[in-house]
Image 1 (tube, helix red, strand yellow):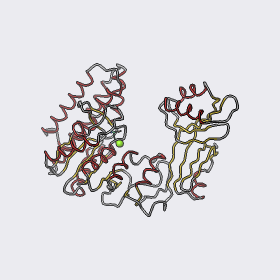
Image 2 (cartoon, rainbow, N blue to C red):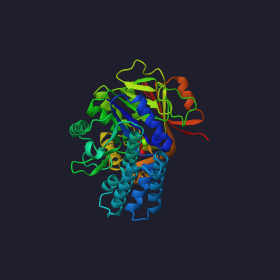
Image 3 (cartoon, rainbow, N blue to C red):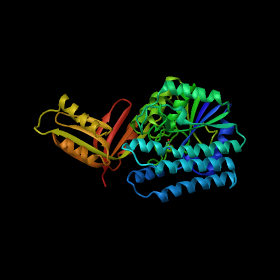
Image 4 (spheres, protein in one colour):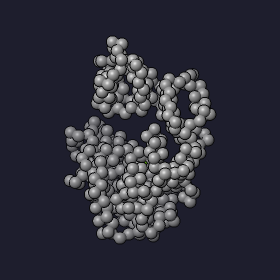
Length: 419
Ligand code: ASP
Ligand code: MG
């Protein structure tokens, strides 16, 4: 058995869905789980609807647009008269309307999870019906019955044992060649919907592969594999043909966004290879992530984070930074739910680099109660794995370096534009 994951971009319109069917047909082998994300930007649209629902504002236009978009894709794929998909779509829209007609609860995260998974429900139904239409023996595998989680709404944690049991049972009860499973979605023991965190569909693919003992996972993307830098920032990127699980985790820790950070661990635990391939060129080699790779380190990788803030924290009375200070400081960051991207200590100050977002003013206010705070916004954080001097020279052109950290494998630089 293999697991394929198709993200939002790979099912963004009718032509894309046809392309997915072609890949399933030619590359899928004789038993396949297809994990699918919501189409295009549907999850973002649902987030807008949820925000308005919670604020008791009018979301009619956004909801109409979401329905119009899916109906149009269905019409292009099936024509106007296909009964199966039209019935499925009508039912799902009705279910969504009912959900949105309910009064909101006290818990935002709960309400969010009851609504956000409709994007994946719609894409899974459309894909399943299209595969059937295309002569592929496919059925729907409902994550709301198979991916069991706890009650930590909006970033639920998986119950591996129950999920293993539920997935095996669902598949044994329905012998098919292909199973279409919603990414990103789970359910509690009481059958409430949950979600695994944004971009969580990669993780769903890893969960299914782990629980079912799949031979491999393939994530189909709009890039030819893992690249050594984001093409958004770099002109001449290189594909990395092979890397180890460890290296993949390192890269995603520093901020490489190609695979969801939680994806690697379950695969590593069962030694299941992870392929990253292009849905535009399905037979091209792509990248394979697997147990130790002798090729790690042959290609330097660049990871950029922009909109960073560099904060330096000083005790008010010119005393040293000691362990008690650090405990306080980490408490404040954890209390605000802020992730530290990089930190450095000196005698009289402790410096951290974080993403600049709406949480910053409240964080600074809290820190200022006990410390003198200096900070710089508009910083960039660049990480280079397997750096050489020329790779460093390349990224610091026209930049002022604010802070630098090196280990043998990795250099990290906080810098700002000189302009
Ligand atoms: N549709 C979800 C999101 O956009 C999950 C995913 O695409 O992985 O975050
Ligand atoms: Mg996505």
